[in-house]
Image (cartoon, rainbow, N blue to C red):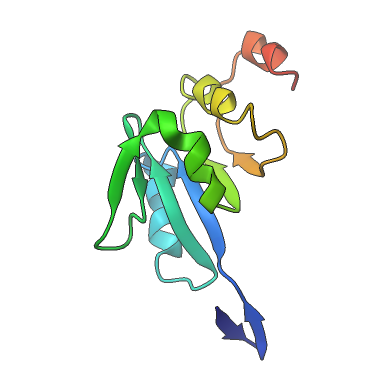
Length: 116
């Protein structure tokens, strides 16, 4: 918890999908010293990294993403269009989980498949 104008806040626990790309790296850089954020998980093409900003960082298979989200408040996605279906499949059992995606270039077929 931290104080801001005499009000206590708990940091927002963030999962970042697409963390090794240009935008993902920018997000990590911007929030690493901001007490309003707690970066819990960063996912790249091959793995999920727990507590990436700490010395105790651990890696997990990307297939464990859905269970790793139990420790997070929101997922921010800056992956590629080809990785987006995997993310949506991981979120199937979490239909109300907050996710903000900055993915571009999604095909009409993919958008129709997931009812956007």
